[in-house]
Each structure stands twice: as C-alpha cells, then as structure tokens.
Length: 64
Image (cartoon, rainbow, N blue to C red; front, top):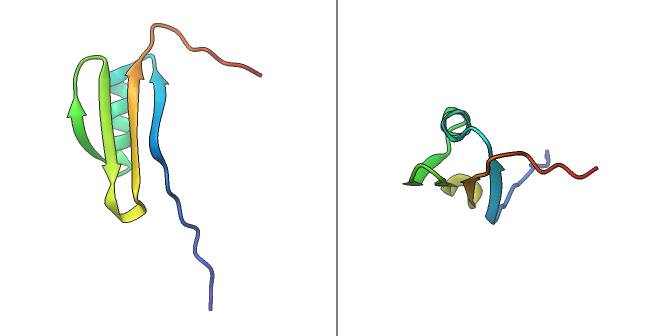
C-alpha cells in the first residue's frame, strides 16, 4: 500500500506584490477564492483542509 502526502495549511498570510498575478496563480492551481478586495484575498481548498490569504505589500521582504 502506498503512502500519501497530506497538506494542511491554516490561516497563513502570504505577502504579494502583484495581487492580480498571485490571485490568478492560486486560482489556476484550483484554490477557491472566498474573499476578494484590492489588497486582500482569501482562498480555501476543502479537499486539503487548506485555508490561506494573500495581503498586498509594496515590496518583498526576504530574509536569508
């Protein structure tokens, strides 16, 4: 019997510089958009028990 990878992301917020591009990306992956504003988007995927949001940010903050 094989093993399955399961994913459970809940209430994480991802910064996004280009909201339209990021929203389109997650919609293409099959996530369901449940909230839409110019600066905030929320997605869910019941099959994976996943719920996360995007929040517009004017620039990326990357820590290495």
